Amino acid sequence: QVQLVESGGGLVQPGGSLRLSCAASGGISSKYVMGWYRQAPGQRELIAHITGGGSADYARSVKWRFTISRDNAKNTVYLQMNSLRPEDTAVYYCNADGRHVGEYEYWGQGTQVTVSS
Image (cartoon, rainbow, N blue to C red; front, side, top):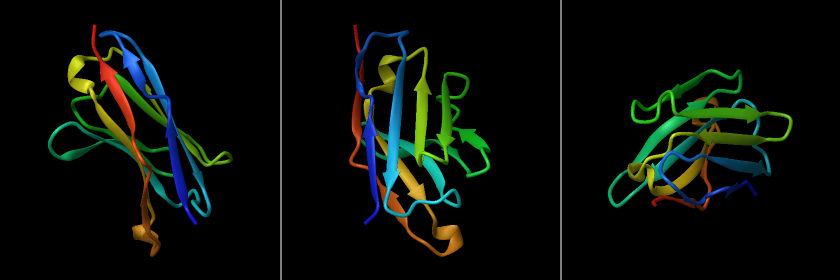
């Protein structure tokens, strides 16, 4: 049974920082592409993803402010969020995508990030 468990969300002032973590258990390998999505009222959007080899890509809205990283030995992916803005307020979801290697896609339960003074 694969599980993704996010942590690290909360309330932060504009300009502040947060670090999200996503711990994967039950069969996620380094072959999976790990990603972070967020959802405010409206569509869920991909904001960052990283391959097992460490190649990362970002949405334009978060580039240069957010950094995704992963520790394959710990099956954990991180999202360091700096210079947070009120428009970053959303529920953040961890994603593990193994469909390109014939496996499955999994989601975490989400963690709320609120940026407000």
